[in-house]
Image (cartoon, rainbow, N blue to C red):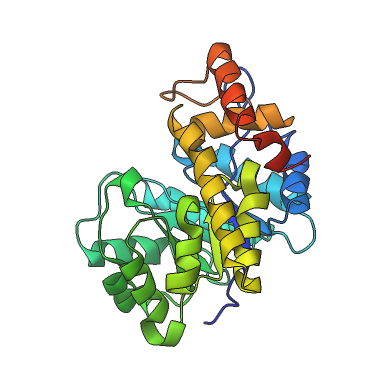
Length: 307
């Protein structure tokens, strides 16, 4: 099977919860409109930014249904189906196909950890066959799940075995490996770059065409600008935007990262997505005030996504 490669930036959105930590579907319609307005072309839901592993299967399926139902025209919905129970993953993949999602994906299970490429291919194979008509993207993020297997051997082993394998969401630092995966089998697979702090590097070195962004919920305009300016040949402007994205990332890194701090930043933009689930330690009101001041000092509110 062959699938059209994604051109542009997809966002890994936060899952809205209420003050008690229950799923709140109400903000998703406005969330989708915000992202499209600022140049994003889709979402990869229920992943790490979305706290997918901290939700029940039923909750994850309700979120998928809501995103599909409110998605603007041509707005891509990719559903993360990874789970520690392969039966749950297969069920969510089937559901994603039934409701009309654009595609599915899965990161390696954090338990038990795949120790060999064959184990990882088998895991992906059993998930992907749940939605045989949809593109499947493996989500490579070893810093979260501890599975540091090489991706080029993974592609070689999965090639022809997983018919709907479309590519990899590559959220890892080695650009050499990323580039080798880009080149494999005449560029057969879609290598969606996942590190917002080095998008420009991936464009120059690896020829990236698309990406899946964690910080795109609030600085998507900046990240899309990096891609657009690079393709126009405005390397200096693209570099300035990349450096600015790093300025923002430097702020969130001080306050428990994108999943926690980034979600609270959305409230500052006017879209309250609620709290994070345990064991995340939520941003306090005092921390929020400090974060706001730090963001104001780098002109964030004039450069971020606009409602």
